[in-house]
Length: 341
Image 1 (cartoon, helix red, strand yellow):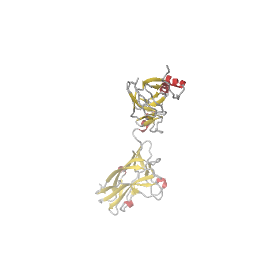
Image 2: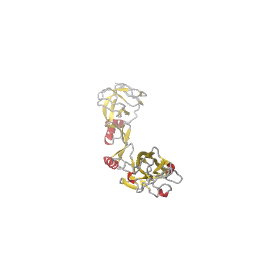
Image 3: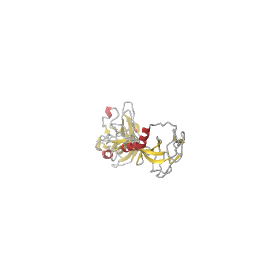
Image 4: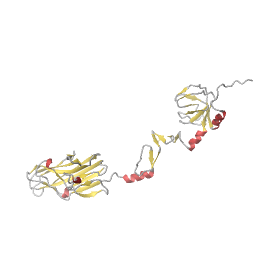
């Protein structure tokens, strides 16, 4: 009898290569229909098969007639069809063709995992990914230097960082005056006098806030009793809070006193500018020995990076009142509190 199953196709692999692939694979299922060379498979094209020997998941690599294909969607054990990623067949797949898993690849992934999934995480050659985030390594840094969206800090690093930064930035000061200040007899903010904060009453263990005293900022004219918020980065958010108490130099008179916070870039040619809203008023209508008045205010200030350092001062002036009379600060009622947020 002359055999009728002779093929005229020249195999693309040698016999030894074919048997080596067969020996490196284990059985999954068999194809239940014929597919021709050139057939186009989309992710929605089912491949009909005999019941699967075990469940498969997306990303599983299979071999059919020596061709490696990738499973697109999960399929349960005993399923009679499965789906692959989009591809065009370069050779036919015949009825009863064996579908198998490459054991060599399985061994490599078991020992050196570079593809597939672990606990729902996608695996590739340099990391694991889930929810659009890929993790490629650990971060061992107590300051979080080098942190990226792709590394995970160690527990020791997290603890050290939290311990160091718990409670926010500790940078604050409360300043008072060792001497009083007297307004000009002339009215208006143009005749304002600087309140002489020169004594640090309370401060954090380390602080960037600096009082310049009578000499002012590096002897820059017109900067006596100014202060600076940051000596390094020149940035940060600050809460500045103050209280001013005054007395009059003449009895039985009415006075309107203005108080405001001013700021200036610390360089020649710059002028002081009022920070808004920081203006407050004292209306003093005392008689005899009862001639005291006080006012307080506060402001949040966002310190931007400037080419030159920025300095501040608190001033007060007589807006209206007795032409010859003045107002004088009382040391027991004047203070300024500054805290970095």
